[in-house]
Image (cartoon, rainbow, N blue to C red; front, side, top):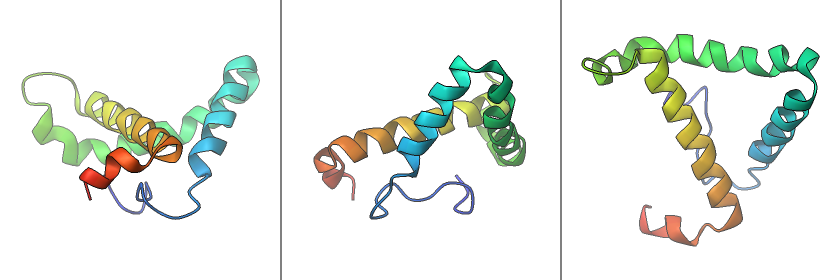
Length: 91
């Protein structure tokens, strides 16, 4: 992932992921807000699709690869916030 789009998992005080989760929950309950929350993710997928083409030669489209990578990144970030110990093995 591009460093200017997504911060590192291990940045201290990384509470942005919790705020993003709150925005998504609010948007799911309020369709009028949903577009504003979803728009940046569309931009991420569009910007990151060109480098993802090498991973989508025989399967999902590049934007689908990016969507999966973003989802994985957010999930790992939330897990790291809750319990960073398993990630010590990675670093």
